[in-house]
Length: 101
Image (cartoon, rainbow, N blue to C red; front, side, top):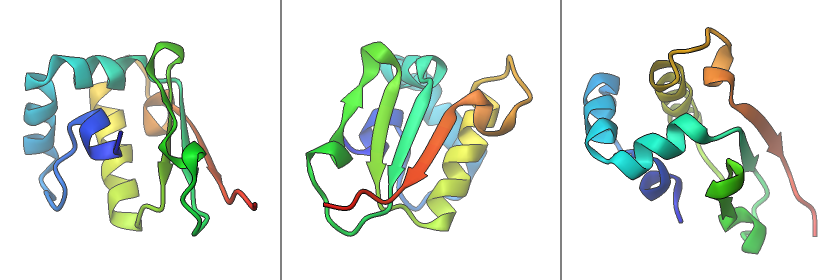
């Protein structure tokens, strides 16, 4: 599952308000945003099975290779969709790493 399909994030859309409206119409994606606890961002150039990991029941997703713009978009969406906290990234634990094989 890609980050776009996981979170109903529209590629190339810079308007956070329209992204929020889109996510709110997709109830499964909205619930995933509200329930996620950990986001793992794998910045290695090798895409392996762990880079497509998604364990929604346990509140985790792993994403491969995102640029700064998409990272900022995800941070803004997390902040706005998870209103119960004022912690960065909506209180999602973000792990940025390079897995070496």
